[in-house]
Length: 359
Image 1 (cartoon, rainbow, N blue to C red):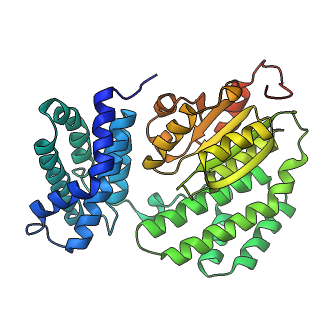
Image 2: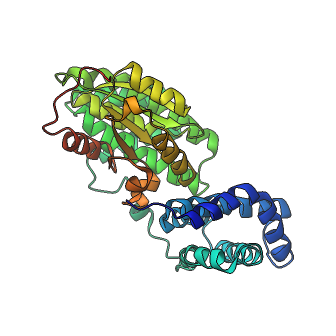
Image 3: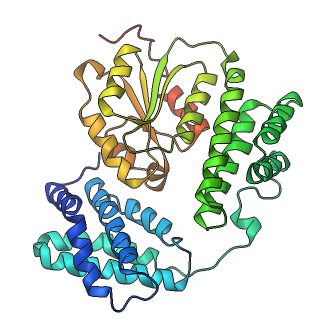
C-alpha cells in the first residue's frame, strides 16, 4: 500500500502551516510581471496551490495536484493567458521552496512541480459544444435529460420534477433516471458553472432541485428484498458536495442494503459513532476535492478497534483521478460511480456471512 514517507509528511506539514507566508513570498516575486490579476487575486491563487501540493506529497500522488490545476485553468477562464499566470505562480512557489527547504526536501517536490507545469502547458484545443457536453446525441434518455436541464436553468423546478415523474410512468427504470438524467445533468451544470456560463445561484438551484427529485424517487429503489446488511455513508467535515454519495447510497439500498445516510460535512467522531450505533458492516466515504483526502486517511487511521471488521469503500473525483489512492488512505475498495459501488460491495462481501452486531 503506497504511503507518504517521513520527509514527504514533514514537507506537507510545512506547506499546510506556512501556506500564507509562502504565498506572500511568491506574490512578491511575480506581482510586477504577472498581468491580469490584482494583488489580492494573485495571493489567493498562490495560497490555493499550497494545500493541493501538500496533499499530493502527503498521499504520494501527483494526480491530486494535476486535478487541482486542471480545475484552476478555468478560473476565470481557460486561455493561454491563464495558463501563463499559473506557470509563473508555480515557478514562483518552487523558487520560494528552494530557499526554505533543504536541498533534499526541495528535490522531493520537483516531480510534483514538473507534473503541474505539464498540465498548464498542454495545448488548448476547445472541443465542439456537443463533444464537451455529457448530454450528447445518442446518450440514453438524452431528450428527457435535456428537457430536465432546460427547465432547471429556466427556474422551473416543478415542471422539471413533473417530467421526471412522467418518465417513470412511461416505464423508465429509476436507476436509469439516476444514471442518465440526474448524473449527466449535474455534470453539465458543473461544467456550465466552471466555464462561467451560469452563476453560483443557478448552480445551487439546479443541485437543490435534483436533490428534491432524488428524494421523490427514493422509495422506488426500496422495493428490492433486503439482504440484512447495513451501511453508513457520509462526507467529512468541510466537504459539502454530497450528491454523488447520495446516489451511491441509494443504489446500494436498491441492491438490498439498509443505509444510514449521514450526508455532508460530518465530523469524524460522529462517523464512527454511527457505524457502532447502527452495526454497519460497510462504511462509504465520499471526497469531492483533493484536500478532503487527508481527512479520509485520518478518519481511517483513527478507526476504533471495535470497528476493525467494518469494510470501507471510498469514492469521488480524487480517487477517480488516481486509481491507487484508495489504498493509500487505508480503504478496502473504491468505486468510480454508483453502479461500480454495487459491484464492489458485492465483491467485498462475497461469501462473507452477515454479522448481526459489532462487538
